[in-house]
Length: 190
Length: 266
Image (cartoon, each protein chain N blue to C red):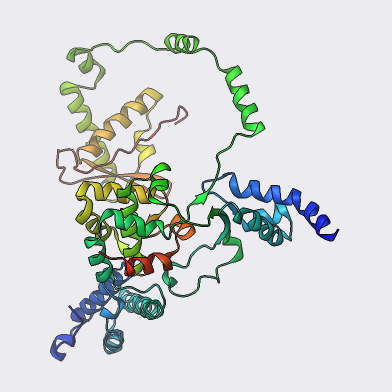
């Protein structure tokens, strides 16, 4: 009886939370913590937990992404201000090569992204653009390397500051398990 | 390229001190831009250099350079700290190792490695009732394209025509008359500038008895500035003109366009 009441109490909030998380309103997808607090209520965390359970059956999960302290990639990044936290719905598992192609990704682009991100991680998250382009040019040629770097910047996987220093973008922080990537990269047979 | 001790005789001069501090700052900045490893800088040596030259600093600029160097060195110390933390974390990998690996791995293998750690975000683009309603209102108010083109055609002004050099000379924008006007205006500006050597306010200079005259004077001034006869400088909200002693008589290379609207009331 209690469980049923809890379920009905949450059903409306679950829908609201789901809409906030899935439908893009601004430049970036997902919902900020204060938005959830305002529209779902103080107990939004419980609502998200329940939503997460439902989503896990669909191979999806809710991810909390904090605005990074890029200098401290090695240390835990859980100290960022709560107002900066953003919640997103992401794929829980991973995609195969065929599936990735089906959603519009070329193998070249995925390989380039993999190389760029791994290199940036090994450089503590920052490296001059020329270094990234040189790394990509070795595999894809000079012109393609420039195009790829621009694509990664445009899609939010990488960022570039005024001094031409590239760093990991919001999308990399949201979508990529960097530890897994570096482990796989180290283990990968050539 | 590691910073090394220099002979004492070289360090005694003030100029050498400034140069050394500048070198330290440049190295620190290159480290901040990730061009070198943070441990490339010997911070202890940097601090010793600062200590050695500190009693010799004379000007405010020297002290600013000293403070700036301390600031840059502290940034390097912070980066060294971060590097140590990073090396002790699970994410640590040697950049050269990663580079070599990337170069040797096939594109397919690289993509596969990436896919094993990639969890793309899910989102939907949507239409809401209000956006559909707004779109409908816009559509209903939108006049057919043929009507819009008609409107544009009727509002079109007189077609551009041609003018011969006599007409242009008569208007004072070509020929000897034009050169004479420019020279007169330049002389007027030089006279006003005179011995006081105080830049002349742009608006008080170009202002004529009528609006037409103001526009004409502003037009001539634009040529004086473009060909290096005068310098136009913004000072806060004020624009000032300064005549040059030796005009280049050539359009200044790398010059930028600086439009100045002339309101009717000016």
